[in-house]
Length: 125
Image (spheres, rainbow, N blue to C red):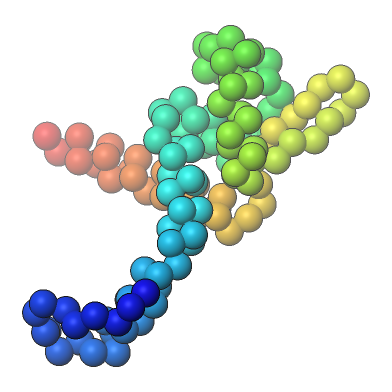
């Protein structure tokens, strides 16, 4: 990106240059956006949260969420394609769990922290 003068100078020279360099990495922000899109659906958040706590098959996930198996499978696909969950086959059964990655762990922590904050806020209303 071309280095342009900012309309207002706030004496943050090196910091602003670093920020500009980071903003030029549009593809990095695209990756983050794709991950957050997956968690923009409450059902996917519930499924992801569940799979952070245990490994389950589609039938059990369906029963726990009171959803059809095809609906659960529909939500599992993008979570898996974005690397948030992994699967393993045991005979005819496929089991899913959260991926053992820093990204998955961080998203799980974020979900739990936001739920904790929300619950505390609602208790004080």
